[in-house]
Amino acid sequence: MKNIFEQFIVRLKGISLDKQEKARMRGFLLEYMKANPVGIGVASPHLGQRAFRGFLSRLITSKAMPSALVLALLTGGTISYAAEGALPGDVLYPVKVKVNEEVRGWAAISPAAKAEWNTQVIGRRLGEAEKLVAEGRFSAEARVAIEENFVARAEGVRERIAELEAEDDFDGASDASSRFESSLAAHAEILSGLAVATGTANMEIQPVLEKVRERTKHAVELRRGAEIKLSFAASTTASVVAEGRLKAAEAKAEAKIEEARSFINRIKEKLGVGATARAEARLKLAEDTVAEGRVRMADGKDGDAFRLFQRAQRIAQEAKLFVSAQAILPSSLWLGVDSGSATTSFRSGLDDDDVEEIGASAATTSINRDDDERDGKKDDDGKKSNGIKSSGGIKIDSNVKSGSGKDDGRAKIRLDQ
Amino acid sequence: MNEPVSPNDQFLQAYDNFADAIFRHCYLRISDRERAKDLTQEAFMRTWDYIARGSAIENIRAFLYRVANNLIIDEYRKKKSESLDELAEYGFDPGVDERGKIFANIAAADIRSVFGGLDHKYRQVLMMRFVDDLQPKEIASILGESENNVSVRIHRGIRQVREIVGDQGGYA
Image (cartoon, rainbow over all chains, first blue to last red; front, side, top):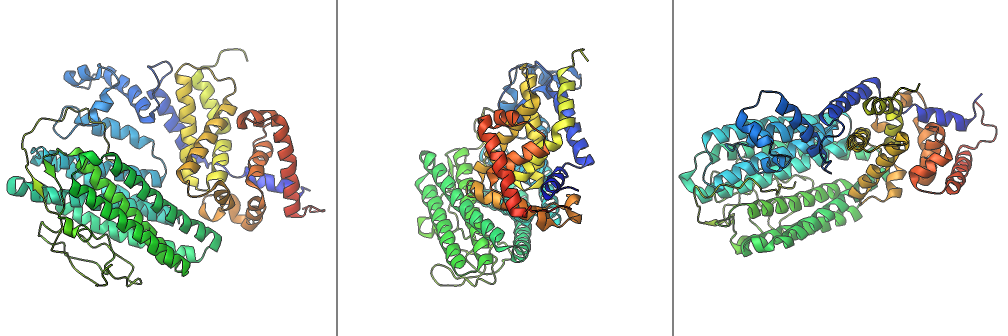
């Protein structure tokens, strides 16, 4: 004879981890404890760093490592930081991929976290390719290594998104696929610009670029699919929840624009005038997209509004990514822009329709990724345009130095995605 | 039993005893089961980091709660677009959790409307007091508030539950 309050409490108590979940977490913690035994070293705030240090100590005692590497490892905990700047072919590159990334991967548990981590790793791979091209040492071996990892990680993201959708987490799926798309699109553009800059001097970049473009198309499809499912799910949920989600998307878009803007302001000196102008044009585009989203929202067109906010977020994210890649590349290689076409060279989508064919013309990099067939939105200048923009695009002004000084391996800049 | 227990064993025992409570604590405030699991694991990892550094923990349960609370606050900050209230409003959505079998059989609306109707400041203390069986003194220390405030809030929370549920003779 329990009163309702007690029943309520009993039901709350029912919320718990199931046996499998609990056991799995316990197993992970056991490993973590082994990797970080009591008393080793000074704790650092970075989670991956801690686990890595413990992992290192086990590696050292294992005899499997080549002695040169062991010597390097014995120099202490800055190794993982140094490895972060490593490129394929560098001594520390295996540490970066097989150790750092492995350990940081452990910290991602939920499908959303895993999708995000995989997306970041993809960014790392493509960033490495970009740096190698800029340094004039992008070899076939490097390309193969990067491609393999890239493809595996891209598959990983797809799987996670499918998991999220299977769990009815359409929000998460939409977010993850949106970020995935942003990252790929930004890198596709950077690589394309680099391809032009280096001309025929670099044979290896083209295959990578093709793969990235292909994956970008997949990512667009994934993202659209997720958005459609989300809008379907939203229409069957209480309006309070749907509105909360919509407002969240709006706020995220604004926050991203803000973030991109302050980032650009911070590294303004490193960028050329052209790059800055272009980045700001993109941010303006993002802001306009948000404004348009608000109009739709007021109109009650929640689905459209949501997609527009997500798109604005992508545009801002891409602007930031592009600019951060530029900052890392040697200043002799500028991915500049013809100021006249600053606003049209990159259309992350106010045009209708897909473009199936990504032109071979290297001067063109825009991939129309718009959706919203229902939108029927026109360009700012009132023209509906299909197909590839074959004018404008990216103009490269460059002096490519080949074989320039090796990166000192201490770059701690991560392409923050 | 007076033999010294190793820190490892102490920690694992704490996991066995409190993992569910910490998870529940996170889940009822974060509303995303997977994310709640992430945070639960993170809370234990950070607690272990602290132990591994050589620091002794007097009350590991309270420590875990505190770490989890901080992680939850960080999570809210990340989603700064959604106010605490908003999140708390639909912070409890049985529909999202297909593994929460407990809700499969009962009227999900029941819990949601009761819990959802509560002010979020009451939810937490009620849960800690009656579900996790923490004493008001411990709750106070975890939340960094006075024991008095905590007791008052508990009583007000109970009252609100009764109001929502209409506890006049609501006996099963």
